[in-house]
Image (cartoon, rainbow, N blue to C red):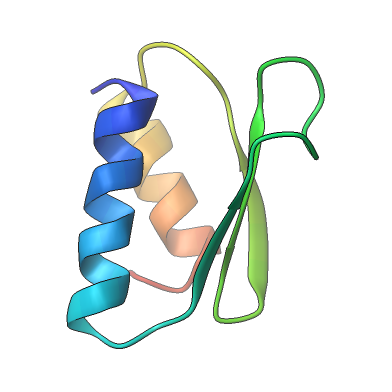
Length: 64
């Protein structure tokens, strides 16, 4: 899964569950993005995301 595809999924989840989502494209190091979902913050790398990495990010954001 590409990062942009994962961000679309996060936007849909946030909208469906009425959660506050912020994506900071300029706060991460290099090409990394910072994502804040209901007060929880994590970093998402660029490029191809493995299923394990996607699960890790969702767990860090409190979605799993």
